[in-house]
Image 1 (cartoon, one colour):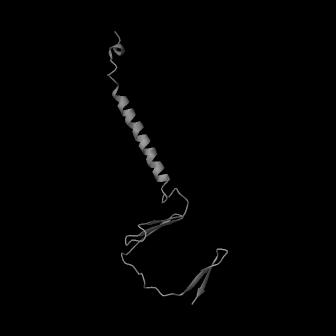
Image 2 (cartoon, rainbow, N blue to C red):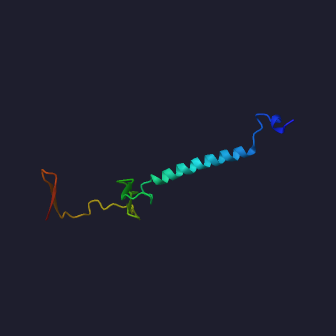
Image 3 (cartoon, rainbow, N blue to C red):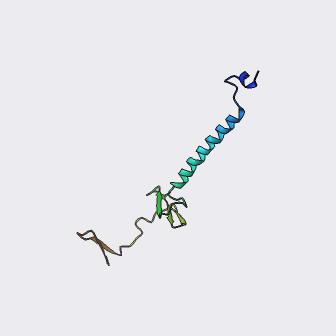
Amino acid sequence: MNNHLLLEDSDEDPFIAVVNLIDVLLVIIAALFLVVAYNPLSPLNSEDVTIISNPGTLEMEMIIKKNDEIKRYKSEGKSDLGAGVKVGTAYRLPDGSMVYIPE
């Protein structure tokens, strides 16, 4: 009798499990590549991007990507609200343009 005829359906080749595992890993790698490619701060993305996280809070952070350079600015946890001095006035004209007039 031939050995192939004696194998039942439940007796699978152990190599098939390894092949299936490799397939799953390839899908995971492809998904991670897509996440990296569509990340705004990705080096593959050629656009200039500015991201502001936690706006208006003491934990505010600003990330600026210009060309291949990425700069990160973090809030120092304090506010300078009310510490400024008025230096002029800005007016919006009917055509939508802005005019600044120093004091």
